[in-house]
Amino acid sequence: MLGVACTLGENGLCYAPVTRTRRRPRMRVKLQRVLWNEEGDEETVTDGITRNKNTQRIEPLGLPLSEATQLLSTPQRHLLRQPVDALLNTYADCPDCGTPLHLKARSRRSLRTVFGTFQFDSPRLEHCDCTRHTTASFRPLSALLTESVAPELLSMEAKWSSLVSYGMSLDALKDFLPLHGTLDVKTVRSDTLKVAQRLEAELGEEHPGFLDGDPSDWDLLPPPDGACKVGIDGGYVRHWLDKKHHFEVMVGKRTLSCGEDEETKSPSHKRLGFVQTLETKPKRRLYEVLQSQGVQMNYTITFLSDGDDTRRKLQ
Image (cartoon, rainbow, N blue to C red):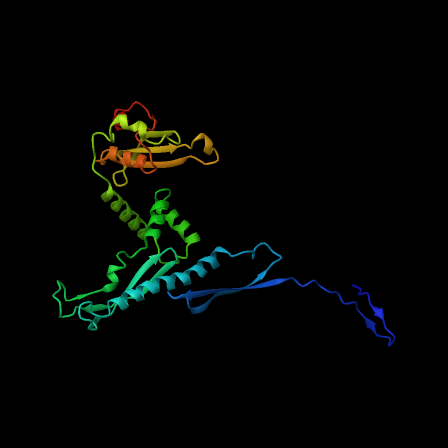
């Protein structure tokens, strides 16, 4: 049997002591979004998120990633809407005579960004008869949204896909971006291929050598701020479709170490890779890797590789 200590009052009643518990302090947080026009006047104030925070536990401290991405998605929508609306207003009238352009059809256009997928109205307008045009109608939004995926998201997809598999890249992106169900493995693979094709198209022409300028002028260049080392090696990879065959892959890593006065900085790394039997510009590719971080003609470059003729020729 459990007993409860009490105090006997003058009226014969028993009074139990009142135990006071310390009230846990809580903090109410409210984040707002304020927009200004070009004159600096406040236009709209919109509530972002309102949260009650318990300040005595570590879990609710600060802003969690899920709430941060949700908070940033709303400003992203408004920041995208503003230039789109401004562009559509610009094309509402004929630039030559000022006559309002007729609407031919309505449709929607989507744009995938790091903060989710957003959709916009994309009207098709008829050209004015005052000037001859090659087409009868046009979509003004096509001049702004030249791609359906934001360049930043394409860059992140390609970066992760170059390090791990497409599936793991998708899992990593969904962990810290509010992509929800708008992205799948097939889309990541397609976007990565699109980036690779664009980079291949921007690659310059192949040359027998890439010595730039006269050696007598190299002494006039700024002194190197570090040492440059390039490691090159090759390996055989099994063919994905024909399992009995292999192909050779050439890989390289360039390390640019900092000078003695910059010991606190970590070395900078760049990597390259290509299929030996398919690559038509191996020297150009290596040259662009060296140039990407400012390697000059007066640098001393140390190559590390085996005695394979292909790799020696590349060096």
